[in-house]
Amino acid sequence: MAHDTGGAAASFYDAAPMAFDRTEGWAYFRGPGDVYERDGLWYLTSPQAVRFAHQHPEIFSSAKAFDSLGSPVPLIPIAIDPPAHVRYRRLLDPMLAPRVIGGIEDELRRQVREIIGEFAGRGSCDVMADLAKLYPAQVIMTLFGLPLEDRDTFIAWTKVLVGSSGGGVGEATPEQMEAGLALFSYLQEYIDEKRATPADDMLSRVLSMEGEDAWTNEEILGLCFLFILAGLDTVTAAIGFVLRALGEDPGLRARIAADPQLTGPLVEEVLRLELPAPMTPRVTTQAVEVCGTTIPSGAYAFLCLATVNRQDRDHPDSIDLGAGDRGHMSFGGGIHRCLGSHLARRELRIVVEEWLSFIPDFTLAEGVRPAVHWPSGTLHYESLPVIFPATVAASPVGGAA
Amino acid sequence: MRILIDAAACTGHGRCYSLAPELFEDDEQGHGRVVGDGSVPPELQAAAQRAETACPERAVSLLPAG
Image 1 (cartoon, rainbow over the protein chains, first blue to last red):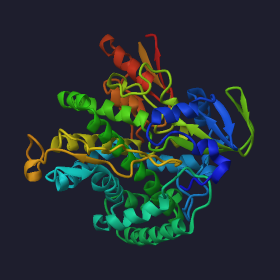
Image 2: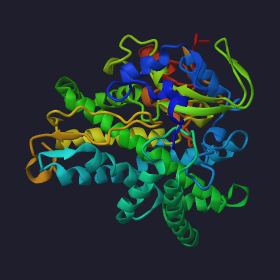
Image 3: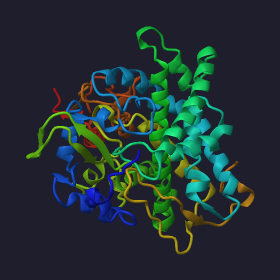
Image 4: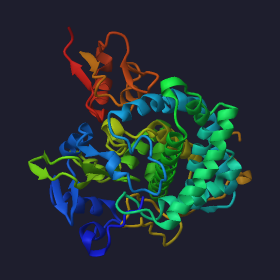
């Protein structure tokens, strides 16, 4: 998701004070108003403006904004506008519905325990390298029925594909095209195999659709690419953000330990404040007035979900467990509402629960001041070193392994 | 009090049935569905309000009973 807006042309965007403090960073983007233009890019920052864009996908085109990623096939369904979009969602939503995710929860939990068990006895780890970058890849591979042995290769391709930045402006680099094609041929092999011999996984289910619901190879590859682009980095990022919040705040850890029901609100609050994909790109198909400002046709516009999340609240810029059920925009809205939100929420809840069962007490390693890379369309920590009392025999505290 | 889901507005965020499972359930798509006739007993009014507030699409409405 190369966001290469090129030097001075995007100086407003590039200059945002985002790296160390998102409160400051999002106040910067909210400052100029509800709807405004800087360096040829448009920003929609208020709940009303973003809601309007979500409800008018025919004006705020997602397809045009996602054209330029390093994908050799259209990303389904995010790069599809209505009316074709509804067909894909009608088929895909049931495959990622909560009841389906519930069916694989035990397996997802087993995998987290295995990953955390690897380092729980060591007394230190890098949350990103040792957990956050591995687990979401495994989850997608599990969902698709791909062998987990391929995980590290899979991660290496996606790392190049997504790049160090994101957002959707600019052309794919040669490296991104190359990684895209390598992944493309890898997936094609499994698509052929599953077409011949269906198994109990999502890829097989999509492949087994018949008649007017049948998917072409190109559509299936587009879907796989989207899952990889949307389902890895984002969850990786969110795992880093939630564990940082817990690692920095013994009071927060104590509250969750005393009342594990608060894990859900904690996850929601961290998602509200620390969005892995904070601004959704769209391109206007016609001139449109939003909140009193006219945006021209063909404009590249950011829907600032992150600024919306910090408005109309008692404690806009800090974790407020009591308001964890008030809702937020981090998964977007309207027809392109994040397809994987139920999966992401489950992954995050399982990670927090299992982490705290193995490692109830931990802190950031001394001198660590986590920063996100900026400018970038997706935000995450590259590294998050933490230290903790080593768990004896690498099994969860107070529980049978 | 009575609850209503605007099916055309619902895109399946699933907050209603997560926050108020006594009042809402998920369908095969993961979209929200009202349980029973949608009437809200007094002890669940707070839960109904939470679901209304949390819905990112504003698809959940609370109406006076009757």
